Amino acid sequence: MSHAILNGPITSTGPFPEQSRRLRLGVVGGGRISQTQAMAARMTNRWEIVAGALSSDPARSKARAGEWFIEPDRAYAGFAEMASAEAARPDGVDAVMITTPNNAHFPAAMAFLEAGIDVLCDKPLTNELSEAQGLVAKACQSGNVFGVSYVMSCYPMIRQAREIVASGQLGEINQIHVEFMQDWMTPETVSDAPHVKWRLDPKVSGPTSCVGDIGTHAAHLASFVSGLELTDLRAEFHVCGAPKPLEDTVFMSTRYEGNIPGTLMATRLAPGNRGGLRLRIFGALGGLEWDMEHAEHLKLNIFGQPDQVLTRGQGHGISPATERLTRTGRGFPEGLIEAWANLYTEFALAVAARRDGLDVPEGATSLPKVEDGAAGVAFIEASVRSNAAGGVWERVSA
Image (cartoon, rainbow, N blue to C red; front, side):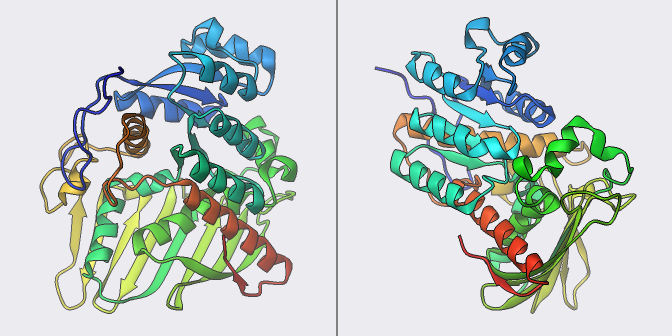
């Protein structure tokens, strides 16, 4: 009989339980984001990377295994081979991260679900809503864990912001504004870079570029913190720099459940903005503001009271649920890699709990799930319809 992986229960506010062993993680897609995620997964001390299909080119996939310290017999030519072989091994992967270009998300994720292997997939989940709905149905039918990499929701101060909204400190929410401003597409020659070409190819990236990549992060973050579903939008796509086959900028008006208004803007041509993800939520009693370029701080303004700036780190009024997602005290910075590590920690807890036959109590973690991924695809499709019709209001429905 196998030993339990978790050494205790998963609770809403207590320390996360330790594990009796590291979970075995496979990698599908060996680009830059996979290396970032692998670094974060290792940081948690809950994962070891043991297998991979690291390129769409079979020969290159096998050749790159040494760079990842993957044994030759676990370096695969493609994800289908990997899913089949790992499912048959007694020491096969417990889960797989899918970090390929967008058009491979659906077939790769489905292959591992059919093999009984848990999945963490990059966003956008798929390029078509019907495919996303198919993954939701398959994950529900199989019982597998299926996480989606909306990593921005894993910053400690975002979790604190969500608690503040849920506690009612802001009063009834009356508007939500979110923007994601980047500048890396400003040079006219940027489209020639290999890692950029597929992001501008509709056959690979899907019907959008900026919206599907960073716009989905902004949309998920707004709903995650506010607790409100995005119901309607009107969108205008723009190419603000050199000609491109897909948009580099989008401006949206948004509505959330309860007919609460908002705005969403995203661009890759805002010189001086590198990680310009900014969220503002206002209510009848006050407002809050978070900026990813200053991710350790959360501004809280209760009308008529002194302004507050909450700081990430043990103490300083941070909730126990938020504190367990921090690794260092105040004054010792944490950032994006640590947010990824929080995502992989919660993914590990979900995978280990499933293998131990345990339920994860509601609210004990906030791992973005396959349903969140499908909502992101519905958001993309609504924005495409709205833009094509001249910026009319469109319903967002997964």
